[in-house]
Length: 65
Ligand SMILES: [Zn+2]
Image (cartoon, rainbow, N blue to C red):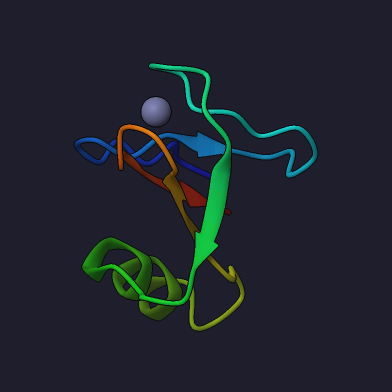
């Protein structure tokens, strides 16, 4: 599977111990689905479920697959 290169989104495969790569802050799961998340879900026909996280401190968005 190709690695997805989407601006401002970092894809990690491990959920445990996810921290912001910029400031090290905790990531909180957000219910808001990003456009990128929808594209990935649609492109993989729902095989890949994405979870979106947001850094509590710097508000950077992360997408977990
Ligand atoms: Zn941060």
